[in-house]
Length: 328
Image (cartoon, rainbow, N blue to C red; front, side, top):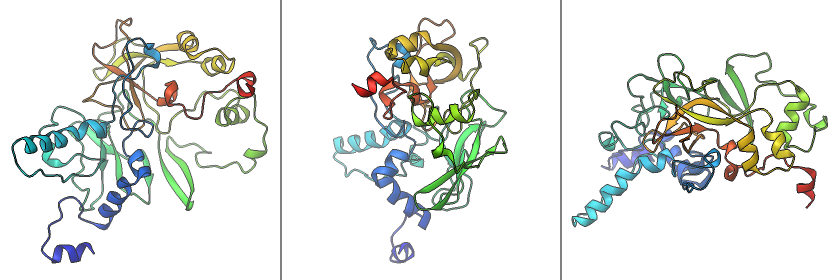
């Protein structure tokens, strides 16, 4: 169909292959839109008022997709104002149209850190490269969407970069499995056939209970890909700012029935995290939280990137709760 369209004298500017056509169809769907460089699946979250505790406040109100698309939308308004016929064409949601590259220069929204990139030869995506000092890394490889990756630091691992790389395998429709490729572990892709027969521990969320049963002393967990952070805010590199993260005891505090304001005050610690703002967004599925004026090492006008898991309004599955809360 694409070849027939071109043969009839039409030109394709964005969709130049079957894979490109598939991606366009996917991003037009609700699921595809939510999965494309969003923040826990959202593209406009809004920012919290100054009265909200900084430990639970959203700093950047929209996703990288939202802010990267503003120049295109502005151009349409300006064309209307000038009495011209607006150009409503757009590139892929995952990557701003190349014609706006100059407007977005100096930001991370086009080919900067955290941008979606491509390492293959498909005509629709072959120009999705990374900017200077960056490389395209496959954080979550997939045979269904081969070659796509994330722009990360080229010289070593910088603050905010992923520290775990893997692939997603689909044995049948609706049955996916994530396998860690790096760093390698003996049980990176293992599935415990008896996992559902093991009793949960406490009245916590299933995932947390499962981890506690398998390895009570386990110190790992969290988001696929992870993020490099500094344990302290001393001598932070340029890309980092001082922020706060939940520490040991946080989930137990919530599970005890105490409110989140108390738990985020008592069970958080300072750390060197990726600095962020509207033009320098976080990686996919990370959120830019408000900066801390009370921390001397925090960069003015910058937020810090953390998993949305730690922002209460993004927890649709709920933090571990007490039996009293569950039965009331």
